Length: 364
Image (cartoon, rainbow, N blue to C red; front, side, top):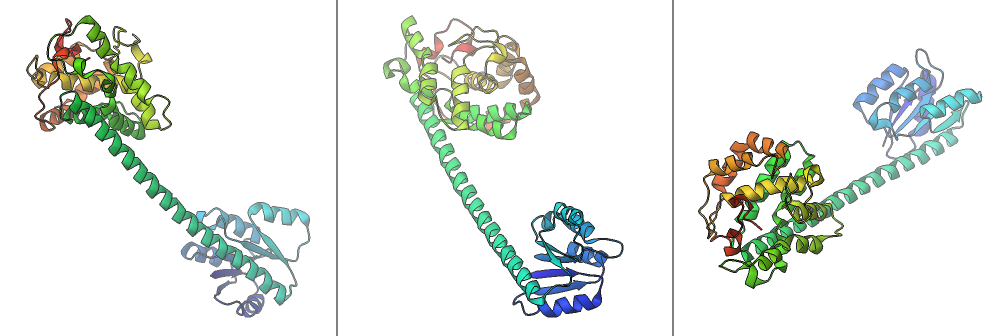
């Protein structure tokens, strides 16, 4: 432990240094000017400062104020030596950050006892801070591990749903990647962008509640079966609703809103505009674009440029115009995702081809 003693009297410094050498494991620096003391404090970390009140140029209060302005000296014990009994001066010293006082003339035994106690307090303070840092590191590590497991579970669940729907899982990967590009382009908070990236693959998780006979039917669906297919949105919301994690709440917003349309003609609630959560508006573009550019039993994969033109055409009706603007601005990145992150999926079952509206809507 290192202590800084500041007094303009060399004899007092010598006397104090002699008295404090009996304290084990204590290194002393003695300064007879406050300017020298403050200069030393910029290059060395002290665990205790003992400073005289009345000195030329700077008082002990001013030295204390200067030290307390430095982050490394916010919690360092500071003792002021003074013969002053004026309560106003002592109050100013306390407000400046002085922790204790020694009255002149002082007893060497009292001096050693005060310094020993304060050094012990400082040592405990350091140990507690080190322990707190260890705990923080352990909590961060545990939190990161839990988050990693949560991400892995969500990703595998999304891939399982996609494979049940006739794909291989690459669709959800592309939807996630494109959603992230658009979210970043909208300058959303970085943490929110990551949440969208992780939650977007769950957009069709409600299909787990659709009967296999309907979900995998190769032929034309009846109106009743189409209505059942659309229920996958409600199934997904009910499956994840009332979750406690922010990630699950974002996923619920995406699930419930990714089939809504900007003009209010979507489902299940027919909401419009900004009433649709932004994460759902983003995922809707990524989902539709990837559906267009992927081969299905009822159609060949669209060329990327044709799918791009379709997304642009539907800005303001199906899609949020601002999201489409970012889609256009980030087109090189999105095109790269579409070209490189491919798979050999066999396509969706026949129910997806039954809509009489343009192919962009053939993804119930």
